[in-house]
Length: 182
Ligand SMILES: [Ca+2]
Image (cartoon, rainbow, N blue to C red):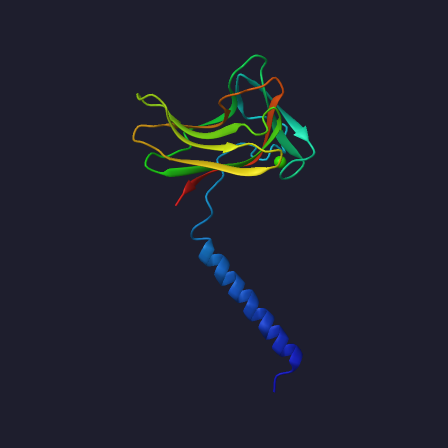
């Protein structure tokens, strides 16, 4: 006759083995790697390029962790962005999705922000997958996707304010991901 504690131990063992079984099943298809460098801006490096803008890491009020990236329009510009280029990390014929969180500040609140997944490299002009959103004063999720055409070697991810830029036009970005879609 099995004691109650033995039964409990057996149940625990079964649960452990079942968990290991599930872990071994899921390890066959690991979740796709995030291709963005320093995606939550928690490291000191800023791996983002600028277009008519300045960027700096800011502490506090982040969507995740302690830090986010502030993107600010350069004086007198009508559009601006922050962008990152993924070169040699993408495969033609595969689809990719870029996701992130953004938050408007100052004159950017109520204005348009577009997420561009831009194919470049090869002989053709660049082509964009584009999704646009209206910035608010709160964090919101945004995304865009693109299937890589033959001959392409580069995918750029742009967070772009395309119009009606005001002197105090600022947005924050955090928790960025770029992943291959299965
Ligand atoms: Ca962060």
